[in-house]
Image (cartoon, rainbow, N blue to C red; front, side, top):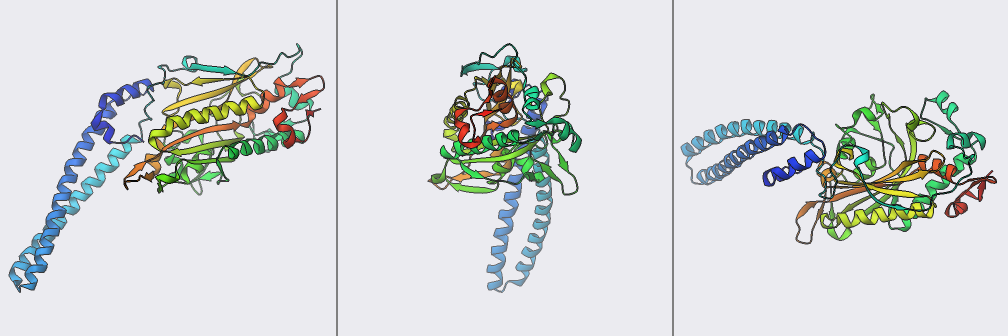
Length: 423
């Protein structure tokens, strides 16, 4: 959520940022400024009345000590009337605060100045390409055929148990999943990310805190009896671990990693993009999350991008990094880098990670703060990234490393998987 002071300081900056994010209802900006001005005026009146009540109360005590009963009664009546007036002002203030909050939560985060203008994925900016593209035989197979050939994943069984998009991993397919999760977690913890194992369901306050509500309620699975939401990413519970907390500046940055399954309805998805592992309703992912000092969050973002790039290099996969344009970014992000891996059998790029800086957008909602050396309390900046999402990584590993002898396991995974090939 945007900080309301920014509207008073730089209205044009907000409008420019919202336009870059392809946000249409710009009238909200003026409505927020008008409401905030009214709220501030009433707050001044509220403070004035409170000060008068405090002064009168002190006078009552002094007059009682002097035995001036008539004057005491007069002041008591005056204080009583002022308290009733103060109650009405407080009600007006609460109403205005609620109206202001309702408008603020409708606005997306403002994009960083480096975010390119654009509305579609085709307008994202290519930052760099790394890794080597495999030269496969002419008879290369897509991963959905390879999983059947090597008995790794049963899509039909998952469809029977639950529905489309809920695959069952079998035998070496299940072991490959477990190996990747363990390797990703070990890689992240070696880089200083503390491991946590959070709940896979969150309450409404947590979903609101990270910006899933009210923006993406239709994309989350909702357990209505208890009003819980199945998490779409570990970002949601991990970020909320620090909701309503104040951290000493000396303990920054806070770095966490977590494995969780992720649940996404993916309403409206269809066609070739959803075949096999390309788009699932339940999938595994390892996440990295940071809380940093506001002055250091973009350095942290670059470190996280380098961290994910090195992970893909270790797996031997060709990848590219894209800086997302304003219209293709998430509601909450100020700057996002997407990682895509090249699928040699499908001959297309598949997204496997997003690394984002949210600045104070989430921490303002969650009230995640720090206290600096002077004792002043400020909002932290939050960042997160996939390190990594498994389905498309698995798809590319199977496709890119298929050989006549079987599917070659990347060297870094062999100690976890216990074999050099799937055959």
